[in-house]
Length: 460
Image 1: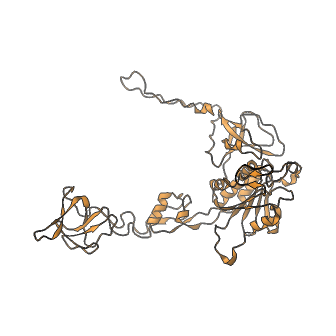
Image 2 (image 1 turned 135 degrees about the horizontal axis):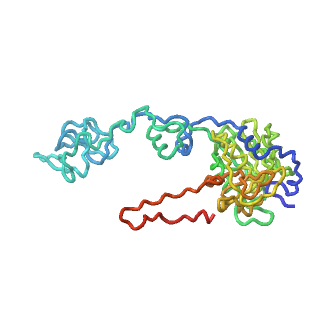
Image 3 (image 1 turned 180 degrees about the vertical axis):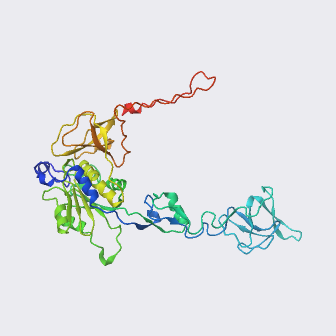
């Protein structure tokens, strides 16, 4: 009898009592979304703020720039030339000049900056060195205030630079740094720790009989990030109960040391959600005083999924050990949970026309990866619970109700975390839009060419 890595045997899955499948697919999604409250706003260093949602305005802590500076390499000058040379940085009297570099502090008394290429060093009647206008100088150079960046010309102290609610991009981070900030207040976002299980799992090379290659380690953290979580490391354990319990306890480091990673809001486990002797998730949650929010879902694949909440407020999302089943459970439970914790809305589900007839499966919702062919959702091949090939080429996932679906019938569907939004088909009977004719120029024999024809829709 075969068993999924860290999971339940096929016979166990068939014999599992239906009382554990208390939630329908829709109920499980809603339960996962409703059980979590948004994480409060918190401060993060600028280096960690990219992509986060700003929770308070970024204001200038002082004038920007906070001092008058040179926009050119050259000479700070006072009055008209020729100029007597002075030490850099000292106050300039009329007809004095001192060297300055781009960004350098304008010395007291300076009225303008003369560019290096517009200046010539010479001597006066007494043989003393003086600075004169020459070279590539333009008429009237230097004008009063020329090539000086005035203090506060970008912003005055207290000005709002970026408004609350913005999704922070690199330019926002640079502005915050220029404004004098070291950290920013951003909306809360769930920190997610991964707990990967299975003593039969190998992380490299071709697995031997009885071994399976790790499919979660290389990609699960990236999917969590796509769903709005902050990956905070992963831990790999075996199949013993002691290992499970220790990993979920999340005991503080000795001596009160600061942990290497942020404390987790969500722990995602792989495997151990069945009911065999090596499946310890439920027992460990119970011993830690936690409660089960979801204990199995009436869906296929991914029905053994578990969602629990521990007394310290952490959530534990137990994914089945089979990779496709795990991804379907993550989409069903993990996506709504992370959205709720991260101030988001319930992930969207829309309808697509089904490209085939799918027979009923009473009591269970089926999640079917599909490809869009000729505007219709065609089930992908290679979509067994332990397979990933079909999902790798899919455009989305159909949510097939227990009573099945007929050819051409609208069926709920959702996009993949790494894919674009699903294209919404036009309503039946909608007249296709006719492209406007190109305008013919007077005296021309024919209209301007409209460009190449796009046949991509016919190619799927």
